[in-house]
Structures are given as structure tokens and as C-alpha cells.
Image: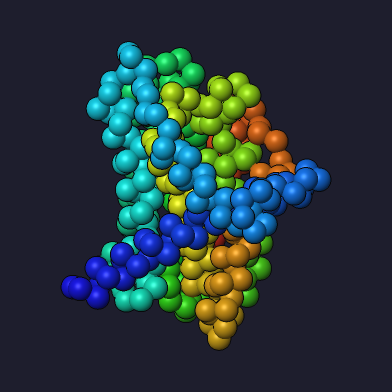
Length: 309
């Protein structure tokens, strides 16, 4: 029991450290993409900037709307952060935890629950902009969740098991031929899962001030911020595990390829934010229901047939 608990604790610590400096990397990339340098003032090249940001947010005075449901208003960010940290239990960094035996089901369970903190935060704030952001977040989740499950099933049909971290048994040429399509669909799915540009409709600054977290500040905002970026890192690692387990030609260089895929997904989130504008709400609905869902259904049926022969 102790090795599993120690592994989970160390995984959480490493992910939190990576999350802190991932925010610095994002600000640097966004800065250079806009012909500026990003954070440079704090110490050497601005490297301790995440620590300074954390100290600033945690030292701010805590405030909440007078009409808010205070208990839920306080607990919603904590629930979001707990769900994000629980995802780290799926990473077999040091030893395999109990949850690593059924990572597919645990991942779906945790990602399905992740919409509740968004909705509860907007509802408990008792503010119009917050409630609109919460409703948009719920509608967005409903729109892509079915497609996400079908795409994951496609990966698992190829791998012929429910574990992200084992090599595939499928070596069909037809399965490999469809690889670009499934990677394309999965890339847009994880953008929606993480509420990132161009699918950050729950956090629309231009039309919702800040979305579901409009009324949050200081430490509570920092917790929401940390939960979002922790989820991005975890989704990137799990995406890399899915790709490495689904395609058998990655078997010989599994660890190296997984690290490269993880880095690619890390940068994919950042360069997408630097390149694409936020899409309109009706365009999101059309894209998820009329494009992604039919394609994911066809892919799942195709890979199911391929896995049977």
C-alpha cells in the first residue's frame, strides 16, 4: 500500500511543479508570437515568475459576492482541483496504483465529473455573467462528451485492452491508414475538454467578462487556474499514452515516442491559443453535433470491425 500512496503523492508534486512552469512557457510563447518577450522582470529571465504569481494571488484579500451561496462558492474550486489531481493517479510513474488497472473507466468518470465544478461555480456566484458561462460550459460538455467516448473506444478497439500504458496487439494496415483522422478528432476533443481556445466558451473574456469564474479572485481564482492547467498536462500525457498503446509500430520506442507525443500535445495547446480566435457558440454546436459525432461513430464502427478480424 505504501509504495502506491508514495507514488501517487510524488506524481502530484511533480505535476504541480510542471504545471507552474507550464504557465511560464505559455506566457513566453504567447509573448514571442505577439512580438514581445513575455515575463522577464522577476530574477533571471523571469523564470521564478510562476512563484511570484502564486504568492501574489494567495496574499490577496478574499472576497465573495454578498448574494452568493458561500459554501458552494468556496467548495467548487476545491472540487475542481481535487478532480484534476486525482487524474495523476492514472500515471504509472513509480509504481502502478489500483486505479491504473482500469484507467479508461476512471478517466471517463473523472472527466464527466469535471463539469460540475464549472456549473456550481457559476450558479453559486449568483451573477448573470457567471451563470451564462456555466450554462455554456455545460452545453459544450454535452456536445463533445459522446464524441470523446467514441474516439477513446476507437483507440481501445485497436489496442484490444483497457490500459493506456501497454502496446497494441493490432497491426492492421487499414487501422494505421486512419491514424491522421483519429488524431485530428482527438486533438480537437481535448481542446474542448480543457476549455481551451478556440473552445473556451465557458471563459469568454470578451462577452462574459471572465465566464463562470467572474466573481472569483485571490486564492480561489488561483485554485481554478491550477486545476485548469493541471488538467491540460494530464490530458496531454494520457493522450500520448493512448496513441502509443493504439499503434503497434510504436512498441519498440514506446517511452521515447510517448515523451515526444506528450511534448507535442503540450505545445499544441499553446500554439492553438496563439493562432486561433474563439469560435461562435452556434459554430461549436454545429461542429460537435454535425461533424465530430458522425465521424467518431464511423471511426468506432470501423475500428471495431478491424479488431474482430
